[in-house]
Length: 346
Length: 180
Image 1 (cartoon, rainbow over the protein chains, first blue to last red):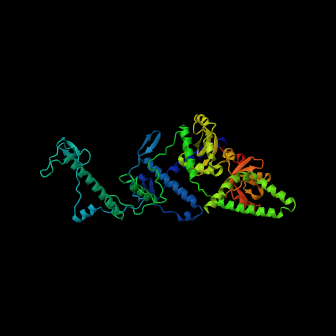
Image 2 (image 1 turned 60 degrees about the vertical axis):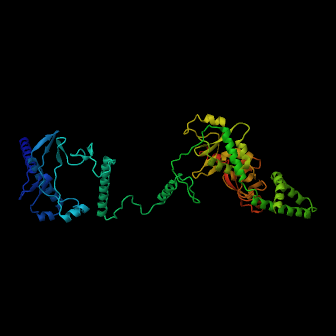
């Protein structure tokens, strides 16, 4: 029993070993083609369609993939390896398979005006060296740009041409010419871009915006207004015209604890002004008064008519009169004067 | 905190004069010391010079309220009176309305005054005139705007509005957290 079991164990170990070996070696009818640079393997073996069509399609695909991956990894192990920080790394060769690019090829740039001209005239670019020998400094310098050889801006002396005005500043003239050339070049560059994108070529100077917004127009008006000799002091305003905002003027307040008496005086003056602006004759008030007078007359009449008829009516009338007594008490003062005034006006 | 600008002073006085007329003078020119209006957090505070000087010891962001708040400026620079100003409006009020005890509560809950609740009204009150509302026991309850003239008040039916509600002392409880 014991020996039997030992044999069994040995046999099982042998089988496991074989299984393991079989795991690493894969037999194929045709060898695979490898491109380790791209980590790529091509399997040109025929696929057993019967096995593929059986229900075990998934298993078949998985085992095929496993085998082929094993082969690819075997191939990678054949490459020279090295140890980098406890990790074994294989050095991949250059990829041999050409992969298609992800994005479509860019369109050629539209030719600039010069390129068009050069093509027409058959002018070809000549390759020039970047560095040239500078005789003055005895060293190699760039052909152009910063620290170039034969730098004409660094001359300390310029000969005045024979026909030129002797008082003219030749240095300033040169500077100005350079600046103009730079500006001209920039303008041409923009023109080339505009032509390439088929936009209208901008004119020289500031291009006006085709349609100004309300805010822009308002700003333009404000700027035009203060652009006078007197900084817009005598400019008339349109009716209902809004004052420009953010003109750089800051709000200024009186100090928190300043001159209290002057503050009080200012407020009293303001009250006086406000008072004087009130209309003298309040029309609704006058009409009310008129109505009230008529009411009173009617009541008096009623009183006369029913005065002798018992006390009750009289009592209620008195009560009513008392209810408004306080208001009335103040009333007559103003009332006494104003109706006369009104009459006088009429 | 800062003094009011001329424009702000004018807007505020115009609003105040609707209730107390030219009696504003009495608020500015007081025999018992110098008083002033100051603006803080868009609110107008009325205080004595002494309190103002004491209040300068408190930093701006910590200062919640000082003196009596009269009202606040809206974002469009209009001035709104607050119920807290009632203490100064009531003694100088030119036009008054007395409310019957039955409708006192309704007014204090923020409702307009109906004809049925109207006890007395100052003679010659014009339409849309600012009025101070009193209870029949002469306790100031709030203020509002006359919806009808005194003459019209006599003729209208009992359910029509006589005084539009603007502020009442019930706000001390209703909007306790916003009244400063």
